[in-house]
Image (cartoon, rainbow, N blue to C red; front, side, top):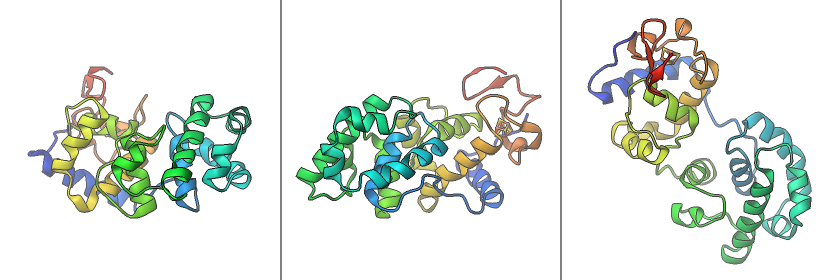
Length: 227
Ligand code: SF4
């Protein structure tokens, strides 16, 4: 079992330093070539792998190009085009509705503020943060997905449980210059080593500062349950 550094700012700094070294090219893994494609890809990626989203989007982005084309697509047709994605019926509805708003209220442009983005169907704070960061170069938050949620708790960077509360907590202890990369580094480490089931603690660069490190730790701090 590792010992986290105190205060939490020092733990964050140490974790970041090691993960920057481990994943020097860490970045978003969704593929897109403009803001609308980015928005669509992020909506589709909720509870679905980026790999599958990229596969589906390579055809989708050839079929539909403008907000009007998505908004005017029949529900069944759009749902069919994304039917290998989780919750494809709901996501098709969100995309048609969001694109109708973009066409009618935003001159066909994906909005660049948190409040306008989160007013769109299917767009919560997490999706809006990704679109702001990668579509508009505006970093005003930290994207908290399932990997960030799990790793920050395992590493005792936060004790919060809900993504919104975790984000608020992190904003106070992660240096602003690292807000964007913090997410990508956590995602890369969550995929490569600190997986949800059976994390590879024996081969983890954070083991000596991680209070959840197996086999010494009894409890996975992400879930609060025994390993
Ligand atoms: S892989 Fe193990 S040691 Fe590494 S961060 Fe995850 S729980 Fe901690």
